Length: 114
Image (tube, rainbow, N blue to C red; front, side, top):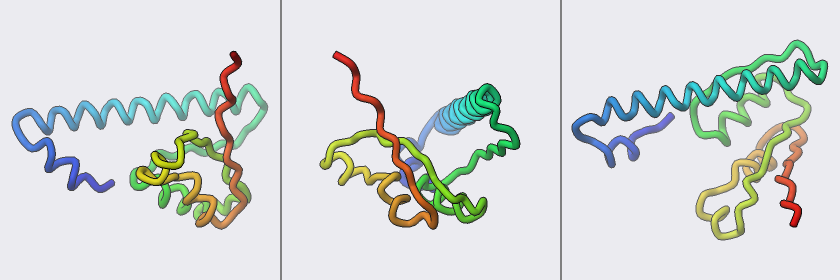
């Protein structure tokens, strides 16, 4: 994971403590997601599930995981950003749909019922 720009903005007293706390929170959130995913798979009768926490640019990490595990399909969510926000931030799902060596299914959030 590249931190160069991020670190340069917050250089100073207590910075390393702040980054330790952020890193701890990220690790806890990742583990919570894995635990929920495993439980969901278990309730649906899916076994032999492997989970792994990886660091780096999500676009590259996901495409590398597709290669590593010889995935036949990649299912991923979409934030539903508008055209401007997507152009500025980039779209992980769009990148993966063009670069992953498997079929990609992008699942949109359901629209709220009024």
